[in-house]
Image 1 (cartoon, rainbow, N blue to C red):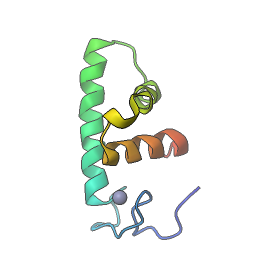
Image 2: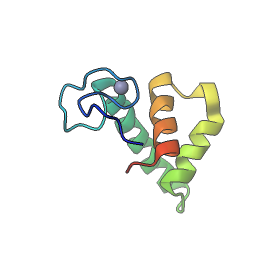
Image 3: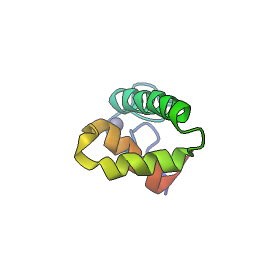
Image 4: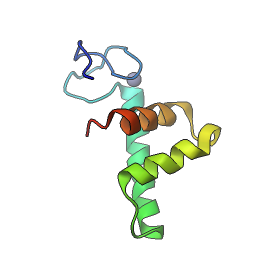
Length: 81
Ligand SMILES: [Zn+2]
């Protein structure tokens, strides 16, 4: 499932500032936080796949911020990496 308009954020459909970015500014920031979180989880649990990490965050539900959850759901269900 590829978005037709490549200049739009695939999550919120607003214009991305830079078309080569994967997401809009807000969602890119959320993704960065997500990656940092993953790195610290990796230190605690030496084996944890990216997908397992996303799944754990999905299980947290409302405890995860909206923007982060958008990215988690998008990456988990569409697996575009
Ligand atoms: Zn967005």
